[in-house]
Length: 597
Image: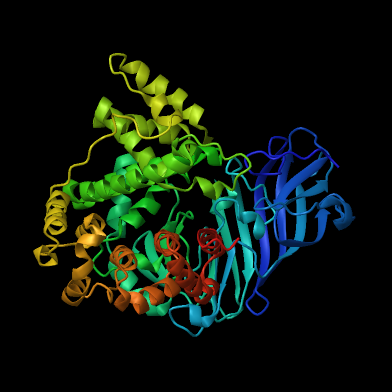
């Protein structure tokens, strides 16, 4: 056995072995809740290493075969160690100097962390089961034996067999109609890291939104989704005008059932999206702009390690804002940006008390689950850093720099230190009179003093209104003429709970907030309801928590419940009802909040 080391949350020896391609041949079994088949890995043994080491977790390995041997290359008894928390365990395979192909035969477990098996009642249609994967950050290893590190990019293909009633989709070249045999072939010709491998299977239909884009969804959601995303082709064109031609061929969206734990997942060619963004008025489509932007920042140019996560998300939030400005105007974009900046300040206030090191852009996630690095820091502090650079150097020079950056690191991975070197060579050194504190932004805690200020006139109006309500404790002062989702979010976040405690019922009866179907407004209103003990909203809150699986909404509500003994009991009771509908990523987070671990 070789000495095993963990680098970038991976056991794999990717410095010694190049992973070139993975071909999957898997059968989808909804009854057993398993994927079964094989992964064939094409490798290049650049160092003559006698071992190939792969990441696995919750996988039942049947056998491993080499192309140059009829004998199994691996023994279950002495090659798999005990699984480590969130890391899994290494699969060590003996190989020769010239071995170029390894086949791993395996089966997933029903509770594999990346796989969400939904019963029919957990879907919108209520008649058919559904499967979707969530591989980020290091969950790909729970359904594919691989080198599960963002530093490793490879192409992949797949043959997926499923019940003919259902349509499988992948982050690859997709089929648009189901066939009688239930056998489908997929190909991803561009190199991607393991966290961008994705699979979904269910009662799914397609609607075209343009020559190279469209939307997949359950039939019951398809019309709504198509209307909500009708600007998708314009988004793709606008993004391409900013930072170069879209490189992935098609861009489609899959609207998933409500248990999806994130707003969206930037799986290349096929963004996975939460149904909570279907508001009916396109007010939440900035999330699609965000996932589309990942086609450049994250998918095309990828963070080398999870410590460099801000390079994926900070760039993407900045790019998202530019897309929204281009399509809907600067006033609207500034409104979104100011709300994000307020959320960041709230996050910073909490983290500076509990984990100040996590307020740095460059993280230190050694011995920690990389999901711990997912916060507003990478996203919004990262974006504010890039906005600061834009302000310092001017948009013309900044856009030229970004185009050069995306071209230089195209299809590659990049560390924070490589970004700094590129920044110094291609921007800082060209304008020596301009002094920017880029190292403070990246390596120091909290938010530097030169953080850009966002001043939205629309939100200023709302904030003034909230201040008057707070001062006079009179909810009749609320004037919602011309309100969008973001006006409501800003108002509800700036109302002091005590000031409206006696007016909760009046607000609810006037604006029907408890019965709202807008997930963003619901979350902010329900927080006030919990804080103020407004129990008329209890049935709506419970229904919301049972039907929504997006962590962004679950976390603050469960945290508010957990802040009092009575609330903690209530939160736990709701969780017991809801947990089967949550993805493992959400479920594990909520258990920590409710002190159930």
